[in-house]
Amino acid sequence: MRLLIFFCFFFLPLAWSQAQTITPEQLLAKSIEYHDPAGIWGKASIELQLTETRPGAKDRKTKLQIDLPRELFVLDQLRDEHRLESKIQAGTCTFKLDGNTDISDADLTKHRFNCERTATMRDYYTYLWGLPMKLQDPGTQLGDQVEQSTFQGQNCLAIRVTYSPEVGKDIWYFYFHPETYALIGYRFYHDEAKNDGEYITLEGETTIGSLRLPQTRKWYTHSEEKFLGADILNQ
Image (cartoon, rainbow, N blue to C red; front, side, top):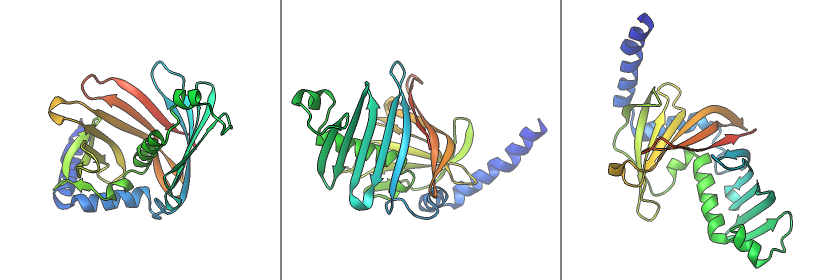
C-alpha cells in the first residue's frame, strides 16, 4: 500500500508535469532518439526476420528487406507450403514462386502477385517497423499537445496523429513511456465515434544494428477486444 501511495504521489505528477511542458514535436524527437539513436532509418538497408501468427491459421515465416535509399522492398514468405517473393524497386515489380520467375497466370492470381498489392505491403511493413521515425513523413499532422494517458494499465504520454487527405484518413494515438520515451503501443480508428479500428501492444525489444525495435506486436479490435494476431521479430 505504501508503494502504491508513493507511486501515485511521485510518478503520476511527474508524468503530468512532462505532458504539460513537452510539445508533441519534442516528444517525437525524444522517442526517435531512443529508437534510432544513430539515425540509420531511411539511410541503410535493413533486414528483418518475422514469425507472423494469426488465429486459426498456420504461422507465416516472413523475411523483409527494406532499403529506402535504393527504393527497394523485398517480401519473402513461406506461406501455404510455398515460398513467395515479391520485389519492388523504383516502381518496377518482380515475383518468384518457389524460386522461379516463370509463373503461370493462374498462380499469379492465386498468390496475389501484382504490383499494386506489393506496393501496399511495402507501405504497410515500412510504416509499422519504421515507427516512430515514420511520424516525420510529409502529410503527418501531430496534435496540438501531449496528453497524460494510460495504455494497457501503464501510465504514459500520448499524442494524437492525423494525416493530410492524400496520405490517409485514419486517426491514430501513439503512447510513449514517460521516462525513456520508448513507444509502448498505439491505436487507430476509421471512425472514432463508432469505436472501430484496432489497438496494438508492443512487448519486449530487439536491437537491429543500432535500431531498437519491438520484439512482439499484438493486434486487437476495439469493439470486441478480439485478438487478431501477433508479429514476432526473430533476430
